[in-house]
Picture (tube, helix red, strand yellow):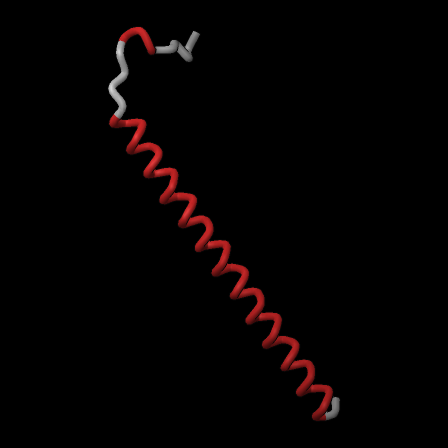
Length: 60
């Protein structure tokens, strides 16, 4: 294998690794934001006072 081909192969590998890392980072950031929003929603629901008239039996 000549030097030019090896250099191009290495450059392509580095680019692939950089793109893969970037996509993974974006996915993790998105998952973190979704988890934070879910926790906030659960906290709001937990604070709502539920009266006896508003209870739905989900086990029936």
